[in-house]
Length: 264
Image (tube, rainbow, N blue to C red; front, top):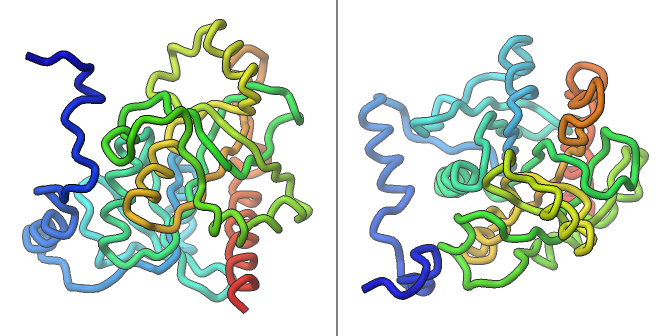
């Protein structure tokens, strides 16, 4: 008899999974007749897909021929002289972590997630970015990776390497967010609670990605691109010029610079 919520029951955190991404990708590569090869060491999750669409439509990047994922395409783009892999439209905790697992199994060493988010605390006029240091675990995926806790946090060593991001000209602040699986169940009461916890925005991936990073010892950093006030104002969900792609590329460039400078 189940006497615990299934989400919290039968979790054996130190046991390996029978199903692993390398085996899946091996079969996908066979079925698709893809050559063996790697994705770039730095990859970006672009849940909204605006950057991915821009790369595809403008031909500034090329589709990676080695990416075997069944559900997504990956485009190689040169930024600061480095090849960066961009994966679009992996929306939500479970999809984002599925793709993250496959990326790291394919050669990724640093994963950057930049997702649209709804404003909870009005610290600035949207659009702006949040370097997420912790995320409220109001989704399901994180509980399959680490034990129950209220928040999932960025790895301290990753945060230390990227702290300089908030000092750049591009508007980036550091703070906490609420990760939800159900954006259309963001009630007034839930938002009030989030504000009481000093959560700046609500999004759908960070808690799960940070839990994955902790469990798998991977390098992941999540940013919230605060673009909206949940549709409560006129002309909401505006990212700015070119659907925000210019500032998105600037943020990725800044992350790469901070990452390289810290390593020197």
